[in-house]
Length: 291
Ligand code: ADP
Ligand code: MG
Image (cartoon, rainbow, N blue to C red; front, side, top):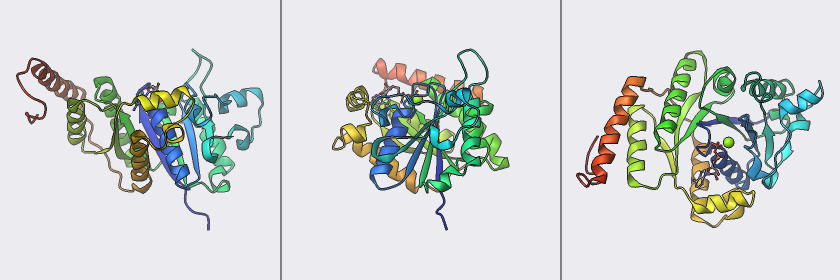
């Protein structure tokens, strides 16, 4: 009997580090011996670039525009260490729903039973999560991914997007949707950034899976068109990504989060704003106050 593929979705606001993090997780799992597919679900279509020497691949939607019948194999490209790379793609700028690429691509792969055929261990969806509208909700809504993780920094807009995602997960959880594995805290360097994200996960009944520092090693690797796992496997940052990948691979206990109402979120943010101001003026020291 074929093994069951584990499907994981990684959400977060644009520019927060989803593709960087996802590609490093894929690369780490692949070098650990697993068969991995990375499925880019962002109209930017650059999810798999650092697995492919910085190069773009034709998207599922673009390929479907050129010909009516598409075999899934025509939209799967080989990346670092044999990782299967797919980009769902997006509509022509200004036209149509940005989520359509995801719906179309997922249907294509389901119909052709690709995951079974390739005998995959992991499929990781890298999904734009500023808005959890129809198309973008597909991986969590239709029982495709089992576990959802969100990449967030301690910035308010990233936390706002994470909180919106939690609302989506909560809504679909009654109808067999995916549950939340936790938050991947990215670009966490200052002590207060850790405190903010720790408090947010506490308020929303979830957890931080890994703290990923902002690192110039990531920048250097990206400029070479590579993941940190490929370009700097002996670096500290690569250790962080390997640790994260291991936790995600082993994770099996996802939950329904408890998102904050928008007024609660504003109130929460204001408290942290006051605290940061007090830090700056020297009235309090970091970690000296329990908020
Ligand atoms: P997203 O996929 O969420 O839109 P990306 O993964 O493309 O975001 O990241 C946006 C930018 O931030 C990229 O240039 C990437 O190299 C950089 N970046 C992300 N995470 C880190 C990190 N931990 N350290 C340094 N740079 C990072
Ligand atoms: Mg991206």
